[in-house]
Length: 289
Ligand code: FAD
Image 1 (spheres, rainbow, N blue to C red):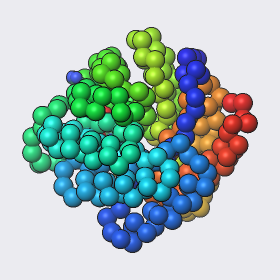
Image 2: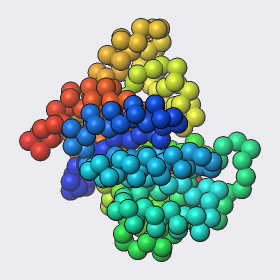
Image 3: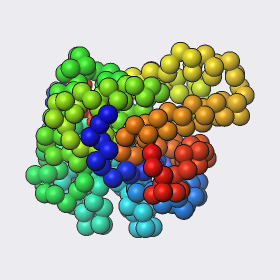
Image 4: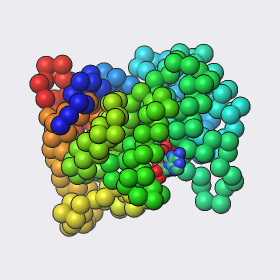
């Protein structure tokens, strides 16, 4: 390991767009708390179809004005070139210069694929439409995307996004550092030379974690699953154990060259910050990982 060490480390927090004014008020508090730790950027997820898209736009524009760069996620599934182009123009005119470019998933029973089929098509479209204005992040899957026909095909498809112009990647979350290192190794052997930043999911709730991990193809190792199961409804113990396990994994990742971390906050500050503080990331310039 690895040429990832050549990249400057960056640290970021991901939010989802709140559904209600009360949710937005809460997110504002979470954002203010996290902002005091000076992350490199925030990002806001985007749903395929429907009103959640408006909420992403509003949330991004509100947060971006407050001083820390905020990156919208943008998915192409179900979208037209025209709507995507208009949205890119809107973000650009508001000073947004980073985008997380995704294919996305259609809610079941909903419509057609749209004009761009895969994330590599979206990356190429962003470059065609907006030139080099945006720093483009794409998704990477150390444990492979659930729909990929094979591990090899998934890597080739990942590289298509890099070749189309992605500047860096954020991974799906994982609880096994080796899967990340193996992915980095394989990607680098294929000629990928961009930062591959681990996405980090703090553990706060067992049943939600299991449900979500089954959906997105992230594996919860048996020893973690069994321990979490044993805690039952004892959420303090779940969080304490989860923070310890995830902090140790992050330490390993950074020690062995990962170029930063991206936290899936689920709009909560505490769990991500416990890991952040365990790693001493407020003094990150001084830490020789
Ligand atoms: P792609 O890279 O297009 O890959 C999708 C599948 O198609 C893979 O199996 C791949 O192997 C295959 N494939 C890719 N390109 C080709 C090709 N050219 N030919 C044939 N096969 C191909 N979802 C949301 O809805 N909103 C979000 O905000 C969101 N944020 C995310 C953030 C991160 C960091 C991550 C890791 C995921 C996020 N997701 C989000 C989930 C993501 O949208 C889903 O995992 C989706 O199923 C795939 O998106 P992708 O951009 O990885 O797709």
